[in-house]
Image (cartoon, rainbow, N blue to C red):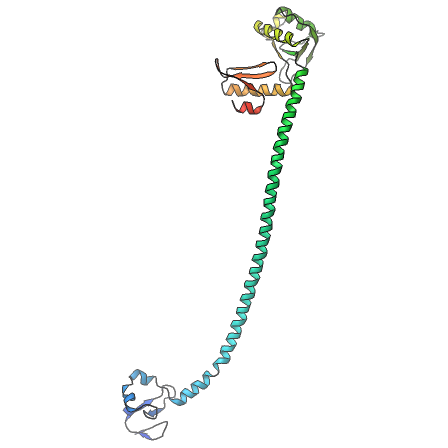
Length: 291
């Protein structure tokens, strides 16, 4: 039974002279399908299997004509999303610019604060130096006011005692010729026995008295027979509170650093590492730290 050509409706006698549409499965003469004999013979089987007739092509083109609307819709959506993305990017950019401006302001403020702090520190240092100088001058004036005074530690306290008489007894024992302006006992927080303070008439008397008394190595029994021989008596220059504190710190530091000599001469604190070493003057905590 012969097959009818979908295009010309004539019978197709030889199947090898026909081609089938891959879309509508219609059968066509090769010349009805638009091929000449040579071109048709050159077609591969794969090409013949993918053949689409003109009608199906036209229909396909008609369907494709609907695609632009879909594409347009997709383009509109894409454009909207793109615009939203641009808006978002612009917003983030503005936020970043705002943040950057704020950071610049903060950094400038920090820089100003740093400069101001540096200025304050510099001014504080100057003030501290000035206060230190003022305190030193006050201390020097205070020390000068007590320059002729001495203090005696280790003397037992008795009822109705006369401090002037006690100092005169010690002066006699040491062969010192002194003139007393006053003598009185004061409380000392760092000594169990209160201290006797004696003010001499001149600084030369003070120096002579100190020199002679220290060579005696006094004890309480040498002043009064009823007092214990174990109670040693120490006679030293009278120092201001600041110098007494500094002297105490110096003694502790010298003990740790094994300085052999620590003493006071004319209200100045002096130290020496060992015999033959240089004598150092201690005027402040800075000097102690340098030992």
